[in-house]
Length: 149
Image 1 (tube, rainbow, N blue to C red):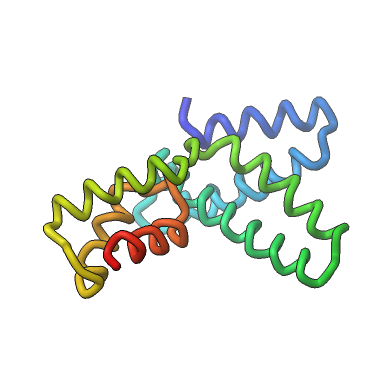
Image 2 (image 1 turned 180 degrees about the vertical axis):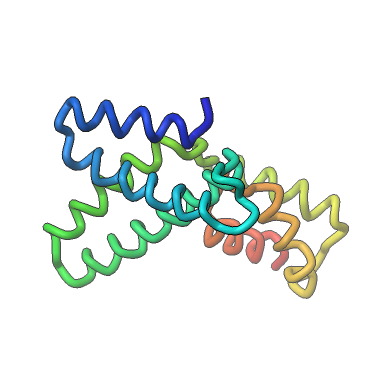
């Protein structure tokens, strides 16, 4: 079952169970998938790889909104974002721990032959590709700067 089919099935389940929070989050996922499927060349379907990128983008948007709401002391809106983020994260791959990220980055740095901060621009794209979907870009960047320092 593709992620798109899974989302459709889960929307129906959430409707039957009258889970408003889950339903709201799933509808936003479904909407994003439908938009991607209607783009030229998509042929009405979205691959799981593309769907994961869309889900990661939506999760990142929720995290950024959550930070803003918390800073502005809007706990009511922050809770909505937290709830939706929790639903979206169910469809994303498990994130790596900091230790796992650091180990993977060490391998990427060694493979690229990087040894100074000047090599950051060369290594960062390789690191992002190697850890795509498994770690946040901000964490990857910060750890890579630490390793190359």
